[in-house]
Each structure stands twice: as structure tokens, then as C-alpha cells.
Image 1 (cartoon, rainbow, N blue to C red):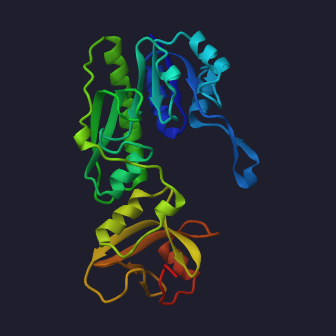
Image 2: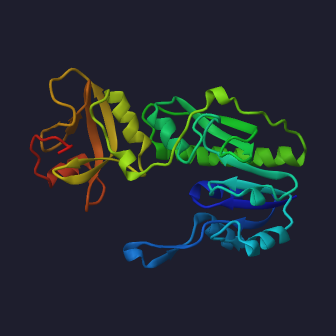
Length: 309
């Protein structure tokens, strides 16, 4: 069985690797175009999937336009039986409908929950105790195709989106291998998604990540860990953007307005919420490196003020 693999970030690499190591004929990889980045945007950055493919002598395609006829002709020339998609962009019908078996996608949620671009972040933000991954055949509407297989993963009380990401990355690779083996053996029964259970995980933007402290402590805490380590929840301290990467919730009565902080200027920094505090453990002030709260307080003159000023 000839396979085309499509993906870009680190999350996709274990899925590609497990297919290669299990002897599957991955005839080509499709990934994002190289971009300028690094300090001063002067370094050409290649995707994690491209680096893996090059290191393993797999042909790499990097189309800017997935409907470009030259690209489509090249894609057809590989005569793939199946296409596997992990963390890639939306595909036009002419691409996903090309192979005779079809194209399946690995999505980092228990579909139909958390359809969209940021399923891991939103599952943690919403305080879910469980998430997982799903393989499904692509069809016209995003993340709506018939489900092939699913795997479940518990979310720890204090786990961040980054920690969940790393676990799902490995679990997802196993699910991709399971799916390809089942397809190869013609031993699978696609199931329609239950539209009554749909929820969404829209793309995150900078403004999406601003913290509203006038909410229950648990809600604020889940928001912060759901955006850690990237793109990071933020607020403002004395007019500068302050990212909060690690914290712990403290539910307790107080008379401090939400958004104000309490600190001994040495060891702790706590921000008031509606019913308690967020004890900040790790943060990053604009223009500075990420650091522990104790290190931050050692070099910053604090006074009682609202983070939202």
C-alpha cells in the first residue's frame, strides 16, 4: 500500500515515524513551505515533518497552492492508495478525494467534541477530565467525517495543554498505525458522528488569550493551563504585557477586587479572582525571559495595583 503523508509540526512526526518503522511505503510527504524566522527573521525554518522526511530520504512536496495543477499532477504521479493527514491545513476535494481508498485525518479530540484548530487547548480551558484522539475519513465539512478509531486520555488536574499535547502526540501515532493496519486488512466500520454532541475549538488569537480575573478561580486557572506553554495567557502589569505560564488555584474568601495582586515582594505573587487567588509560579514580562516568580520579584519593584490597568 502506497501512502502519502501530510503534516507540519512536531505533533505529526511520531505518526510519520511509526509508519516508516513498521515498513509502510510512504512514497512522499506534503508539508508547509519553509518560512523565515528566528532572531530578526533571518533564518530559513523548515517544518519538523520536512526535517524527518529529508533525514529518511522521503520525497518532500511543499505547495503554496494545493489547487495548483503542477502540484496536482505531481501528487497523482505517486499513485498513492491512501493519504494520512496529521496537523496539516484544510485540503481541497481534489486532493483528499484523489487516492482510491481515501484520506484520513488524526484529530486531537474525541470527535464530535472540539472540532477546529485548537482542540487540546480548549479541552483544558473547559476543564475537561478526559480527551483523546480520533481518526476519520475526510469529507467536505471540517472535522465531520465518519469516525474510524478513537483513543481516550485522562487530563490531570494540574496538567497543561503542552503536557496533554505531548501525550496525545504519542497516543495519536499508535492510533494512526492501528488505522492503517485496519484499512490494509479491510477490517473497519466507519461510524457517523453524533451531531447532537458537537462542540468547537476555534483558532486562538492574541486577544483570545487575555485573562479575565472576574471569574471563578477554577475557570481562570483552567484558562491559564489551557494556554501553557503556548500561546500563553496574558494580562497587563503597569502597562506591559505579562504572560502567566504556571500557577495554582487558591479558593478562599477575600475583599480584594478581581485583577489586583497581593505579594510579599520576595516569594509569592497572588492575583485576586472572584472567589480566591491565582498563585503565580512562572511568568514572563514583555521584553524579558520566562522566569520563576521568586526570580521575578527579586528584580521587580511591586506595589498594589490592578493587572488590568
